[in-house]
Length: 308
Image 1 (spheres, rainbow, N blue to C red):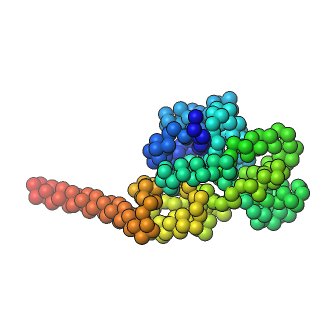
Image 2: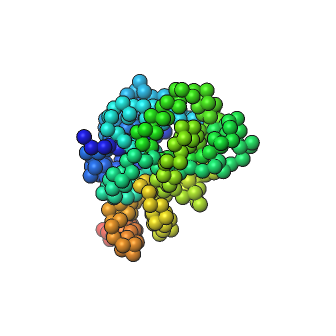
Image 3: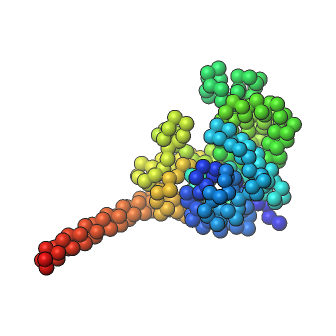
């Protein structure tokens, strides 16, 4: 059996995947090596049959909030570990995530790094005396760390997460009580097991924090403007392990996303040209539809006045 990838989605707000159609098309290319799992809050709110079919059992669902989401990570890991022993990568994703590289390139990166976790980490960048995030002030200085909240773990490190939650319960619980622990806990536990230096500390999920949608949330890519296209293009150039993007608004044009996904083998100028062309065609088409609608209204008014 081939090594496999577990795509672990957390969708416990709206219970949807914004770009479900695009995801399903993308996954189909690598369906022999991809397993899909969804964590949710209420099974009754799931309307998509595809999501429902890949939802973890209700008995595995745990209570979570925006500030306390670690139970979702751990229950997804535990279920995916037991569900398929061939799962070697565990990719954490949200409802607003979307793939941003081709299925072929994704497979190549996996085959070259299936035994390596990819999670960007660093020394905590906030004032730990002022912010209670992950309760860092209450734990030893060597663990004053942070990590990207969306990342990829190996099977070995996924097991480390479960073991830490069980065997180091008091410390794990203390960290989680501080809030937003998903932005520190994974770097901390890997440091605890002396494995942090073995991971690839790189970005896997492109985000735009230069233009945040709120103080705690990155930019929501919404209209596919040339500015947004440039941000995505630059991020792909600067992050060789980037595989996903967040946050993508439901209205973000699929044509632009697919231009990035399915034309990455073209040179940079061709990629940019294709994406810009797709964007222009989209807006031109919208303009034509609006213009045609206005003409219909005018003709209707003309004929009404002519005959009546």
